[in-house]
Amino acid sequence: MRIKEHPILKFEHGKKVKFYYNGTELEGYEGETIAAALHAAGIRTMRESIHLHRPRGLFCNIGNCSSCLMVVDGMPNVRVCVEKLREGMRVETQRGKGELK
Amino acid sequence: MPEVRFLFLGREEFNVLARTGVPTAEDIAEVMPSKERLAKGAVAMIECFQKIPCDPCYHSCKRQAIQPFADINDRPRLDHDKCNGCAMCLSRCPGLAIFIIDQTYSADKALIKIPYEYLPLPAEGHVVDAVNRAGQTVGEAQVVKVQSSEKLEGTNIVWLAVPHHLAMEVRHFKVKEVR
Amino acid sequence: MRYTEICIIGGGPAGLTAALKAAGLGAEVTLVDRNDYLGGQLIKQTHRFFGSKQQRASERGINIARELSAAVLNNDKIKVLTEATVLGYYEDGVVAVEQHDKFIKIKPQKLIVATGGAEKTLAFPNNDLPGIYGAGAVQTLVNVNGVKPGKKVLMVGAGNIGVIVSYQLIQAGVEVAAIIEAAPTIGAYWVHASKVVRAGVPIYTSHTIKRAWGDQELEGATVVKLDENWQPIAGTEIDFDVDVICLSVGLSPLTELLWQAGCKMAYVPELCGHVPLRNENLETSIPGIYVAGDVGGIEEASAAMMEGALAGLNAAKSLGYHAPDFAEQRAGVLKELEGLRSGPVGEKIRSGLAKVVL
Image 1 (spheres, rainbow over the protein chains, first blue to last red):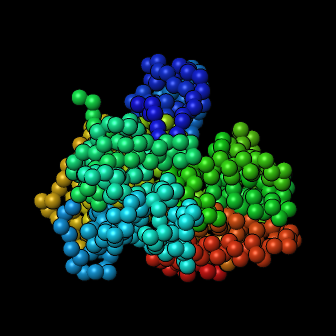
Image 2 (cartoon, rainbow over the protein chains, first blue to last red; image 1 turned 60 degrees about the vertical axis):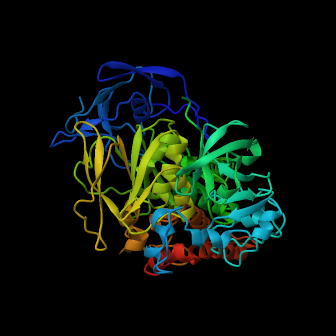
Image 3 (spheres, one colour; image 1 turned 180 degrees about the vertical axis):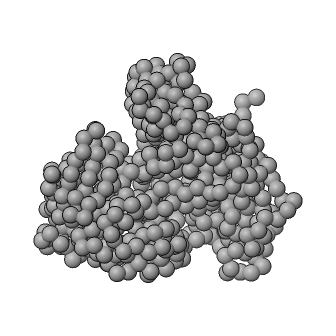
């Protein structure tokens, strides 16, 4: 859910782009973080915990904690809270530790 | 206002304001202008009850009604007789803790100026729910004016007319939901 | 290898002020920050600051960030590396940096570490469910990204961050169900607390979170009252139907680089974790390594700016740079810092700082 009006702030966005979340096409703004675009679409689960396979989401949102690791364009362990959205990105839930192909 | 008493004055854990965020009647009495001063017209009420490092109110007052701070942690001391209710301090207070009260507004209404940083802004003439310091609706208020110039940098000032007996109660309002 | 007189790590309030002060004396500075912007956590502070005129009281953090960043970017003496993450500090005094997939080595004569802090979490059942965030994370989401975290929030912790973020959530149109606080009193400035309470958000002191519930995401939480020994009182449970929990339970100083450098460290609860010992110039036990801001102990942004000024001045002075009014500038900053910490709310900081003097 995006904030439409704010008493103090004005939000400026880049151009609208399409990206894919586990294969589903979504829209976001170029240059915003992947996590922000996913949250705007109501998606808050980013990965599965390694041992107990529990859903995990965002925790710190500034690149400190690694709670939000996802597979982005085939690359695992991407902190989506600081990685910027680009046209056509493929973002997937990360399961396990991730492998470089 | 709920009836609350200080059982163990001075011990912070028994301080109602420190536990709830709601100042007590005693707290309010301490910063309230005198009846005589209120009868003369608009005046500020600084509801700042804690020693914190902060002094913009002092710097914003053009009439030196707020006494100089010996220490930045001092609580503001307002000389109500020097204050003319100009509201310069209202939008400079980071705590949004200053209000203007004018008991002489009309025969049956007092005017309260409230710093307001939410949306939607009400429109002049609208009737809104009048809310007390504890967040409870205690009646209705009419919006007399909304100051929202660029100079205020987002801290708008809303003028509310409320019945006289609510002048020391109402410190917030809620825009009524569209039914 | 890149050579610089002063390298500053971190472009938040402390780092930016340090850069401006050091460059002001004439030193040549390299400022490194991992983000693609400067300002650190100031960029999400939409509220007006407390403090004095010198600390820009009554200005909003976002505006302070804009001004400080512009001043740094327009200063010829300061070279700014953004999107540059410091990976390590080596014993020969080399700072290793990764920027745009390139490995950069910087050899400074003096180093100012201004890396800030990281949010703490809290242990309770299901605390890992999506929908449970650090309060600062939600502040970033709402005030920087312009996105809501959910519909209804339970705030855990009534310190300044918890109460201010609650206020900012209401401004963004998100409902805040309540603020709970395990301590018997509100830690935030009372004016902040009063502001959210009159806006309809109750603050429950002596309450903690018992558990969160939800299957794939957060669906609610149970809160319980604590007795005077901080033990849960059976039968006092309250259920909150919320899809967001914000944890505002403190920050820890981000001190990894100081450990690597071998600075003498001490665990000081009042400063929120392991922090470096330092002298009055903010120089650590390793000569030439200075600290400023939250990395040396968690405080307000106003104090971070003043510490940055102090570290910047002293680092430049130690390189031989001087200004006719140096003594005045330094004394002014020290006086400001003392003022900020002198009142009752500064008691904790004062007691903490007394334990880290070199």
